[in-house]
Length: 339
Image 1 (cartoon, rainbow, N blue to C red):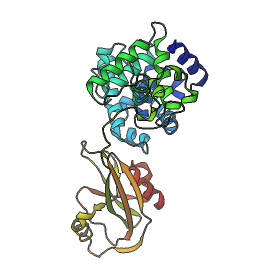
Image 2 (tube, rainbow, N blue to C red; image 1 turned 120 degrees about the vertical axis):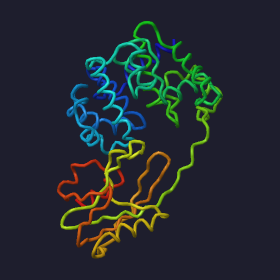
Image 3 (tube, rainbow, N blue to C red; image 1 turned 120 degrees about the horizontal axis):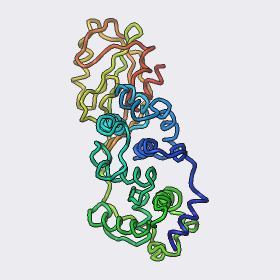
Image 4 (cartoon, rainbow, N blue to C red; image 1 turned 180 degrees about the vertical axis):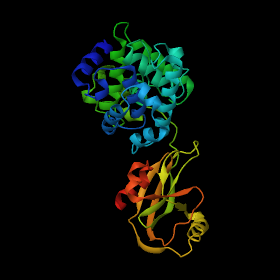
């Protein structure tokens, strides 16, 4: 049987991760959120640091959001950290800090999507539940030769039916995790078919066009941005701004003043706030910062200022304290050059 071959392969090839040791619902939840859009080897140190700072849901719920964001700093997609924090508060208030064991209860928790709910039920509570991520979609679409767009609801239901048919009554969680692992290690975008335990029953391999699958719509075009970043220094203090708008990607993060190509008049307005014009010391090397559908080119310029005007939405912070604040990844690179 396919499931037996897959289980045997998984028992020999499963990677060792800290979240697979002494699995708890909390560890599974945090790891799965971190693993969204981030490769496992990058997640490991963040997961370990998170568990050290927030060992359980009660500690996480009582922590200030600023601290949560700081621990997450560098992992990107910060909305994930904010959702973990708000969901922890909800779990403490409604369930006394215990993650529910039933699907309908888990679905009530803010920020828990179908995959995360399925992962908690499968990996933590060892139930017969579907946890279908990009890896599983790729494996199933190739295994069954699904030639429809996998982002469509009808195709998603089809994939779910195939996965469910593969989950045995006994220990279904092993096969579920094995499918994810197979997609991560073997059935990658460029697959290693010769080492696949399911190669004899793979329709895509039989067709001779494995990389055709999964069928997806064209990717959204990357938008290039060019930004001037002002490093304004006065008596050991630097001007920074915290994004307060919770709808923004960088919500809760600090950045130096920056201006897109079409905002040069705003740049002049900021510089005009100083009684004595800041003196430009040097221009730093250009840096690149990618987020969602954007790729931003950051061009930092370091200025010495002779006064510290109060500028709306900005604050002056001493250099020695800057590391305590959470910066967006692009501006964190700039910060490192300062420190």
